[in-house]
Length: 134
Image (cartoon, rainbow, N blue to C red):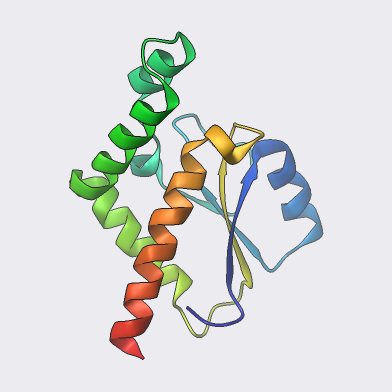
């Protein structure tokens, strides 16, 4: 990854402010619902399955199980794998016009949000990509 590009997370309320204040920020929408802002990428394949979100909210599954299910999906689902590789390409673009890339969804706190998990997965992929390229 270019030393200039940072991978961050944000929720929708922050994303609106970021987009207004920082024209060098790239927003990546990773939720099921339609994005609230323009000039973004929508990677719906990286959103967790809606039924899993409902199971988490109603207590049918706990966070640890949700996290494992989501991680497994990121490693096995063809669309998710393709979109992860697209993000790695975006993040390693040496000629990028952006200096920050935000993974965005609805959850305000990313402690128990899939975008934190996705960021961890992407950080690991980026480290591997840099070792191969570097």
